[in-house]
Image (cartoon, rainbow, N blue to C red; front, side):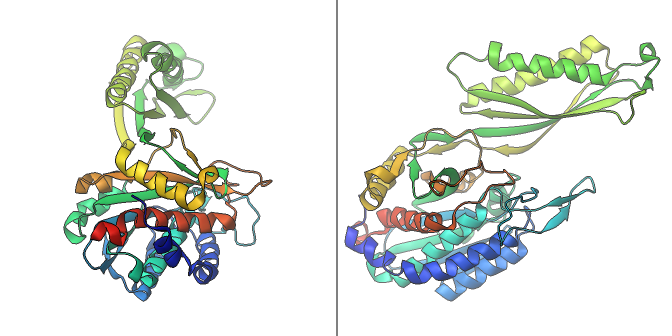
Length: 412
């Protein structure tokens, strides 16, 4: 049941005043991004603002949680992620990021909010202020959670491992959103699986080094790696049942340093996306089987190694929560602005938080590109949502979804 329109409008009636500082904050966050697990200044800014709104604030696992208790009623948790990407921004906006960092190889890389987490932070802070100012229109507890390190799949787990479920009231429902390359002001919802599970694997295969003119005295891991890359393509085309979803991508294949040297190893970075746990298990087993078999066929002197990292759970929206939030969106935004999102093959670690509480959740998309504006996908160096109406839509969506559960009628 959606909150009565009068309650929603009463809370959102202060949006104009909130909008002024939101736009300024967004530009600041966009220009000063911080990489995963390094979000210290961002977290400090979030904490300062939440405290100013009257929230009980605590730091958990590198993230920030603000709790606003407002009488008897349900507890609603809304999550925003805070981290940026090692992507050099190429937008040429006046507030474009000029921040750089040194990566694990020692190279200097640009840092930017190429995924839009600056939008998420700004919208949740705006909603947090509006709900604090509009306490007379709802009852219950609102939890604003700002998570680190989404881009490395480490942040949600870090917060849970640091005792999140003992330090925060158990939510009755958890919510999250993501800005996407759709038309600004459009809201997309989806029942059931919405974001795929994701697994990254660092595979090292071993050869036997030799002079480039004497390949017969070595075992060439470059040829071995090439054979593996080609064979992996058959997992989806020949081993996955037609109609079932799986993606296997080799994003990197690195070996050697010089044209006349046969190296002694090659490293492959493989990424897998699935929507079904049994398909996932089968795909991962197939990868290991193929790699081992190709190593055996090549006479590799050592067995391959498999390092699994950046593993993301499936995001599977609860039908009842999703339908309730979607109905509230349609009531507020109108039918034309609320659409079916469809399955998005990107991945998220948000669901680790509600899963740790045993709480149902829903996750929706917010369009970020104005009509006539060229749109770019998340993680592109050109990704730059239109400030408006993106911030308004994202802020309103959080308030509307929260009030769909925090209305005074629900508390009575």
